[in-house]
Each structure stands twice: as C-alpha cells, then as structure tokens.
Image: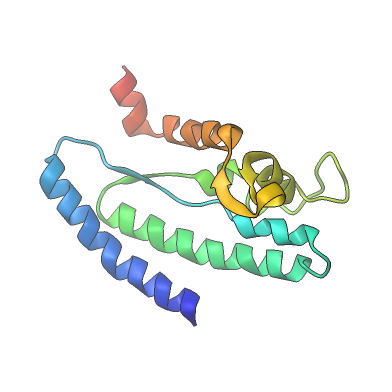
Length: 142
C-alpha cells in the first residue's frame, strides 16, 4: 500500500513540479525526464529472492508508466533508462545462473556490493547515454 500511495503522489505532484519548472525555464528550454532502472533486482541473488526481484520489476513498470504519461502529457521527453539497464530482461547473461537484468544491476550500481541503489561510474555513463539518444538533446548538440 505504501508503494501505491507513493505512485499516486508521483502522479499528482510531478505535473505541478513540471508546470513550475516550465514557468521558470520558459517555453523554449527543453525539459527531459527519465524513467528508472530497478535496483531491487539484486535481491535475485539472495536465497529465495527471485520472486521478489520479479515482482519488483512489475512495480517499476507501473512507476515508469506513470512517469512516462506525465512527461508526455506535458510535452517532455523521457530518457529510457529502464530499457538501457534491460530491466525486464530475465534471459540468461554470460553467466547462465544470472539473468541479464541482474548482471547489469550488479555491474552498473552498488546494489550487489553495498546494497546502495545508486549507479556507479559505469551506470551513470549508461544513464547519460540514454539522455543522449533523445531528439531534444541531439538538437542541442547540433
């Protein structure tokens, strides 16, 4: 129930934040958002953690759907970090005992080593790459 309350807060508060940001930035300044990878995929490696990891992806999909809808409604683009991190890809990685999404969470965040949800340097490079793919960002670079 806590997750769903938070999801409702995102759906109600993010539009207000984006309106205030647009008002402050003006109509010509691009505003881009991002969706999220699922750091809780790391629980897959814990004894009995596979079900929780799979469930967390579904919850992340809900959050990312709300974020995408709010940003789209406001005419803003979204960097697809979820896709970059292959969050929904439970296919085997180069280590057949670990799915691709779990391997990337371990490689690109501190979740598997320090139980810290933040990206490491490699992860932040990947996140930046997701932003660089956005048409608004590419136009700024021209």
